[in-house]
Figure (tube, rainbow, N blue to C red):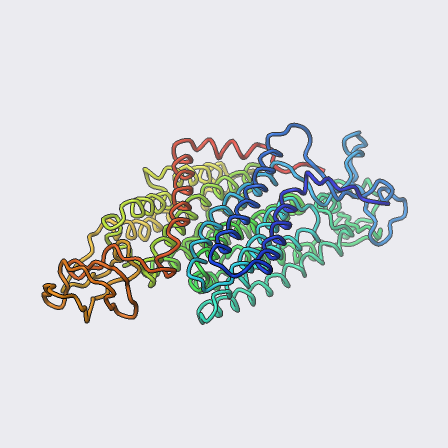
Length: 608
């Protein structure tokens, strides 16, 4: 028997995979010229936009969800199940239940929301990558190939409806990130971050696979909806299974009866722990700070949004679709993990003085906010988590885009580099302040405020039987705590930088990649020098500390208008475009939050 393939359903990941292969071939056969770097970036961006266009076309179509890689009818419903056979769910015999075969790939509203989010974020990451690659220190072809592979996994994962495809898609998201982190050659911090990320990911995958194997062993099927039916007590009697000691019957496709509550509980805990590593949930969060700081900034942005979105997509599918009947086990655990994550993440962020490291721990705290709605018994909880994730993606990507832009001029990455940014570069300063205010949930950053309101409303509703009040209180306290470091960063942006003795203190210079340097040994004729600072003289080929700047002009010891050919000053155009794109989306979400809420309909995941 042959499985039919719906190529329209799998078109987005297929386009990304084909584009990845094309980029690798072009990089191998095109001559190494400066224009090739731009050409490969353009091809990558075109592939991501093309995949997003297909996702949009799938979203506007009407009709049933798209399904492919389904079990052929001849393998369904055999009277004597063998290894690999599928036991159909036992429900009342209706036309709808008998017509739907289990499928590995389903394009429903849930898939479209996460795929659109990953691809929209992918566009921003590609732009940030163009800025990062402008220095020439990183192999361009390999970078874009790995980035496209990660996006292909992020698009395929929310469509996965069996355990095998879910694990494969999740690893397709994770594995290329190791190499992306280490592609910055001769950088010890990047290599260290790559090793830490690799070890943590391998451990998390092993833990998750152990839980997945237990689920398969106890149910005899890899399909998520079939796992839910096998574990559901109501269906046991209909299949004529032998009940366990507590009157509850479970069975696998091998038709063997089990008394399985303890085994299922262990499986649930292991799967939850595995995904907790992926999304940096406390106590599985320790890797985040070092990895974000050591990785190139576009990779940090990818980890904070695309990888996190993929991890949450897989976690929601496992918990809601496959283990929905085991809510009594995982709901309290998720609530405790959410409270710990938002608290620890905020406390760690308060102590940071490095911009990317602060955003890393802030991202951990945001994971707690996203996870919180899943810690109550409510059918709408999943929708609140997804809505918050969409809001968060726009705000966090914008912050990383501004960090990329500032890092072209100031290589330290410290928070003090942002002192006076609103005066040196008003557009970047205002954009960064807006993104930080959004993340804090303060006006005029209404996107963050609406995101938190969506979660608070769900928690205060309490789900079935209440119980979300204490989690709402914890979130309220942490929201106030988070105001400290976000507002402190904004204050730095609007605080003028001190100028002492011809040197800029705590600030990056406009249009120059040199931060806080004093021009020495200037061979300018007739120039006036005061206290070692060159005042108002045009310096040709002046020597600065560790770097030569052709044609730079120094005024009061501050270098202005200088450019470094092919150095850290390059790449500001794509970074600026990324800032503008993220800013437009964040402003749109602030003005019309219904744009996000309409993306999350009442029934996201297709049944069956």
